[in-house]
Image (cartoon, rainbow, N blue to C red; front, side):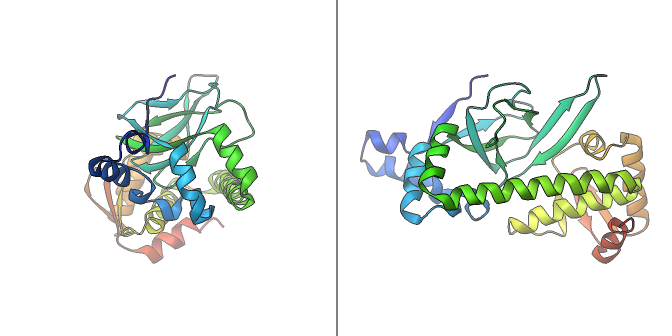
Length: 254
């Protein structure tokens, strides 16, 4: 699969006009709204410009693939806007949703030479892309960046283990409550209102992620609404009305 990458600094390198410089400023690291969440914050300030010279934007339409399971890893990515899902097709043809990638999430820096999941855009999405070779060179020059990547890998591994253990003993409403609180935590880290969730994924995505049927997920939403824990004013909007009870529900099996 060939990705079209729009280089952040390419136009500014071609000309010194004010228009070109404004374009670079509006599309490069200076305009990044998730910079405080990205791994590049581990770089010294004088190296951030070097990273910008190496990087570029990838824009995806809804449903467009970023990577297919089994493809060679050539780039690492930071999600800057939108949302993506990681999926895998099981031997019996069922789809497994392994996770959702939101602004600030990092993709692709792994010891595995090939992707273990298919990654596709749920909605229109933008990612910052850097070649694996360039990122490895930066890590060698700046151990702090490599340490940050290792920390994130450990956090992701711990989260995956916790999820597997929790799903094995949680009831469907507990699973949904935990999912909504996780989405709230992601919004909080982005500096957004974590009491009103914008969920770009479908109910089928949520069901495949939680290991439930779509009918069960729908019943769980109905139950949480009926008990006054949430409201759903729009199909992809969830208001958290009673955080304390949601926390208690999500932790009930712990």
